[in-house]
Amino acid sequence: MSQTRRHFLVTTAATAGVVTLLPYAARAAAHAGDTFDTEAGPITVHPVSHASFVMETPKGTIYVDPVGDAAQYADFPPADLVLITHEHGDHYNAETLSALVGESTQLITNPAVFDMLPENLKGKATAVANAEMAQFAGMNIEAIPAYNMTEERKNFHPEGRDNGYVLNFDKFRVYISGDTEDIPEMRQLSDIDLAFVCMNLPFTMDVNAAASAVSEFAPTYVYPYHYRGRDGGTQDPEAFAKRVGTDVEVKMGKWYD
Image (cartoon, rainbow, N blue to C red; front, side):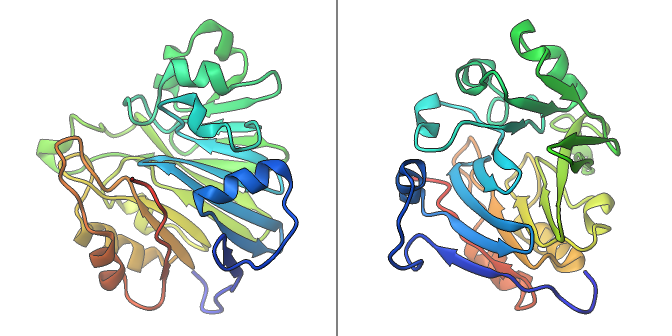
């Protein structure tokens, strides 16, 4: 991040005051989203569950790794774009996608997921490998590597297969980690305004590694997400916030019931 940090107004469903909401927005408010008022226009983040979330943006509504019951998404506008980071069941589910993808929906996936897509979805999808770029509504989306470095974890997310993403809105950059450890490619990111960073063991990294990486690339805001494992183990987002320090504002989304 440059020395002159960009600041953006953030409001929440609980503190936004009295406003007139459109039907979708009124129902989506139940998901307690945060709105970032940027030079590109408002960007509202709605956590859904674990690694799944919805972003209402000036470019359209973006679903990230939607899985589970499609009814979870009934409160939101239909997806204009779906981003899939990788093939694991808490990030990719063909049945969920088939229920959510409409005629005009665009999909961006890593190549491994693209090969798994049902034929009716492949025609709407673009495969993007690490370090490549795709476009959505005139916006560049960078595919950032996402992988494990620790020897005993490399089988979970091998290098070169899975994606994170950077979304380049006008003067507002959003980083989505997907499943990764604190790899050099994450630490080398710059000018990130909003980040979503995973942390759970044994699949990704612990709270200390996540906080260390975030402190280095220094986004303006960060959501810890994907912090409960299948075995019930949890990385503590409050501990993460304390370790990150005061230069990065930590947002606490409602990812779990």
